[in-house]
Image (cartoon, rainbow, N blue to C red; front, side, top):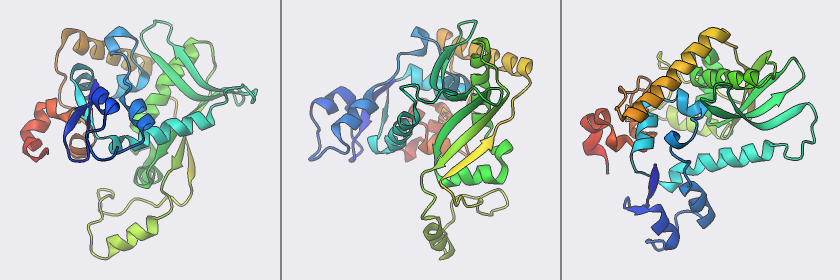
Length: 283
Ligand code: SF4
């Protein structure tokens, strides 16, 4: 669980100590941001897992659950952007009749829970999920959504189980992506062209297509209902098995060429794969 923050000088501090008194000259983020960022959910073994936790790599979820880990507040900034934007798009008053937002549901077997961003009762029932992403990620979707958005496609199909178990019909689904930095692409491109390494691109070394709009809507394929249910419930069983029996799951398969291990896996110091390969690089 998240128990510590990493200050800007790379020293760790317990979240509660940080909130009591900052050890630096000045707080690295507003107090309320730090307070919200320090709030973690209950352990999975004391509640039902979420769709995202079920679909995340087992080892990643296991390490986050089993160990006390630390994060740098500045690295958590996009969480607040995402939460704030979801809040903005919520219809708290129920003003729009044909739309339900932030629909929290449990499946019939009571094995998992999830909150659906938006469900449209018209068009036979359409699930809509919102993502707030950087231009590179959206560029990969513009290049090949089906291939590059597997995680989100599965997530939405997980929501479909919840909806159908609760008597909502589902005839379609879509991923609504908001591009948080669609302007400024040209500048980066110029920098890239001046000889600096262009960091992202497809396997052929070409940059991904450029998002030119702040908003993209990608239709999401609905999987074979029974096959996906089997896959999904098997994952729940496996995740709970690893957690209950305290067994370290296998190394994650999708590591984005180890970029995830190095930059996007806060508990990586407890992962032998990371420690053996990159342990000495860690500050
Ligand atoms: S360090 Fe890499 S392999 Fe290990 S849990 Fe994190 S993402 Fe998975």
